[in-house]
Structure formats: C-alpha cells, structure tokens
Image: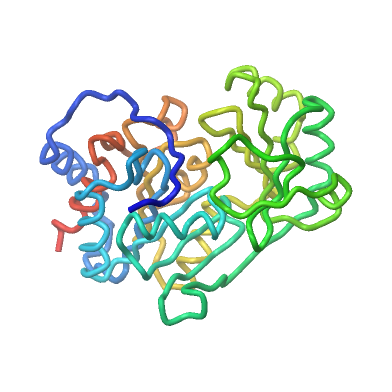
Length: 301
C-alpha cells in the first residue's frame, strides 16, 4: 500500500518473544477490568505504537480486527489531525472505527456509509495568536502550521513529507486570526534538545497544552484539552465505564491518557518519563507491544 507515512524509527529494543509479551501483559491487567468485551475501550496511539516506518505489522492488524470482532471499542488516539488519520485506518486495513485526533480537540467516526467515509463528531478550537507570537518571539524563523478542516494553513512549506495533509501558505495575519484545533511549530535547523530548550523559553506550557515530538516539532493546543479529555468524552459517548478504559502510547502527549485510564500502558520504546506515568510497560513497536496488550485482553474472554 502506497500511503505517505512519517513515523519514529524503531526504538532499538532487543527482540522479545511475542508469547512472553502477552503473558507479561496478562499478568499486569487489573482484576477490575470488565469481563464483558463491549464494556472495554482500548485507545491506541499511532506513531511509535501501532506503526513502523513501513506500516502496521500483521500482528497489529490481526489484533485490531480481533478486538473489534470481540466487541471491544478499538480507538485511535493521536496527535494527528482527522485527515492524517485516514491512512492509519488504511494501514490497519479497517474502514470503520473511532479516533480522538489532534491531541484531544477532535473526535471522529470512520464508516464507509458516511458521506466522505467519516464525520467529525466533536471539535474544540482556540485562538492561536498568543501561541504563534510566543513561538516567533523565541524562534523568529520557526515554521508555523495551523490545523484547518482541509489540512494546514502554514507560514511556509514544511520539509518534504512531514505534512500528509493538504496545506496552503497563508499570511501571518490570517494564521493569527483564524481559530485552530491544533498549532504546530517546527524548527528544522535545531536539534530536539535545542528545540526543547527554546520551547521552555516560550512559557507556552503555562497557558496551553504542549507536546514536543521526536524531532524539533511541537504541538500546541488549548489548555485543558488532551488525549485524556477526548477519550473521556468518547467513552461517555460510547457508554464505556471508566473501569473498562485501556490506553497505550509512547510519547509525551500520551502521558495524560496513561494517567487517566483504568489501565495505562507505556510502549517499550517510551522514555523513562513517559513510563513513570504508566501502570505497565509492554514491548516496543518493533516487538508488537500494542498487539500483545490487545491479545492479553482478548485471552480473558
């Protein structure tokens, strides 16, 4: 399948037998997890959790579909916008599902019977002017991207392949004045460490939700909206009790949902800070850690 994909490289974790990972995941499941699969929602991060640079493995695809067949709510929880989630369902060979997008500001449903194959159920926007000004004050040459219905409005083109969605170059005035569901800042000339220091200088973490990616890339969103708040909304919408919520991820933007869930699981490729917020740790993406977690849950039924 030829679908644009930019995702973190493998973590370098040594090979771990899949059955061992499943057994480890089973041992870590809380006894309070419902025995009724329809009362379970498994929220899966995408980049560094479900996808390798070449796409989704057969184990991941199989586990996702078996979870759906069992009646579990298999949900994508990602920093990607709605348009960039389309290829994720493609890699999973799925045409139906739910996703919390843009780090919690947007909730979408995918179904081929819907017009365009999907619909946005809920969307929360914010005024990006303050965040744009803060980024440009510290990094005057930073690339700015503001999420829109069609993709991104940008201050200048991003490095090739980094934006899957349609993008249009717009004036800074338009970027500042138009509501956004997510703002992106990118400084290709900086290392991730240099970029992290620059973001700290902006003070944005005091006024907005901030998540630095695996390169010199930052997602900025409205205060109080995270993957956790988006999943809480979706769990209520799908009538899933909190005791049935399971989340798995590897990035700093996954920390809120790892803390929120009844059972939060960090990927083996996650750094120690992310792991510290999780109830358990599974294998890395190259060892199909997310699939092992889903298999462990399925083995209970």
